[in-house]
Amino acid sequence: MKHKPIFITATNTDIGKTYTTIKLIEHLSQKGLKVGVFKPIETGVCDVPEDGNLLFETAKKHNPLLEKLKLKDIVPYQFSLPASPYVAKGKKKINLEVLEKAYFKIEALCDVVLIEGAGGLLVPIEDDLYMYDFIRIFNAKTLLISHQNLGGINDILLSLHLLDSLGVDDYEWCVNFKEERKDFDETTLPFLKKLFGRVLSVQDNMEEITKSLIAHIDIEADKL
Image (cartoon, rainbow, N blue to C red; front, side, top):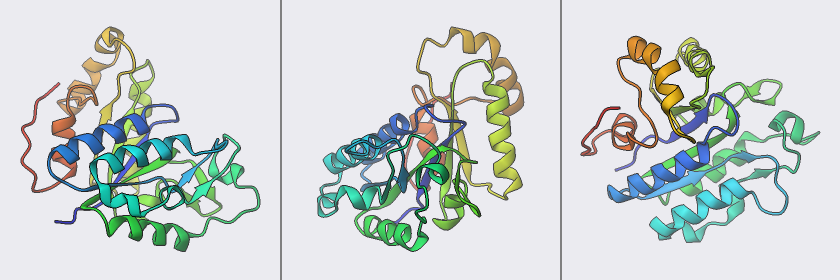
C-alpha cells in the first residue's frame, strides 16, 4: 500500500533531521514497509552530500530496490557553500521538474518516501520558493523536530503557527534530545504538556510518531 510521503523539517539547522529520518527508516522498515529517501537540496557539500549519502546507504540496507538508483537521484541539487539554497546556488535555478522527476523515480520503488528538508521551514530557495513549499509540491505529511534547549517553546510555536497559517494540518512534532534532558524537564516540558497534553521525543516515542504519520499500520503507542 502506498502512503503519503513524509516531509521532515526542524525549527532550525543542526537539530537532528538526518538522525530522525534514519530512525524513521529503521522503524518503518521493521513494520514491513519499503522506505525510500529524498533530500532535494543539500548545501555544504565538499565531495559527497554527507546527509543524503547516509540516508541513501541506510535505506538501501532495508530496501534493496533502491540499488537501482544513484546518489544524484536522492540529492539532485548539491552546493558547496554551507548556506541557504537561495545563496548557495548562486545564479543556478532550482528546477521543480528535476525534483519531481527524481521523486517519482524513488516513489516507484517504495511504499513511503521520507523527504528531508534543509534547515527550517522558512529557508529560502528561490524568490518565490521556500522550504515549506515542498509540503505542498509533494503532498506530504510533515514531521517538525525541535531542539531541547531553552528557547524551544518559542521555536516550536513559531513553526507550528506558520504551518497552521499555511493551512497545513497533517503534521506531527517532536523533540530530539542530543543531551541529558533534566534541564528540558524543568524549563520547557511543563508549558508544552499544559498546552499540548503530551510531548513526543525521537528517543522515547518513535512508535507513536510513526502511528501519527502512517495510516493503517499496527503500532502500540507509548507516551512521554
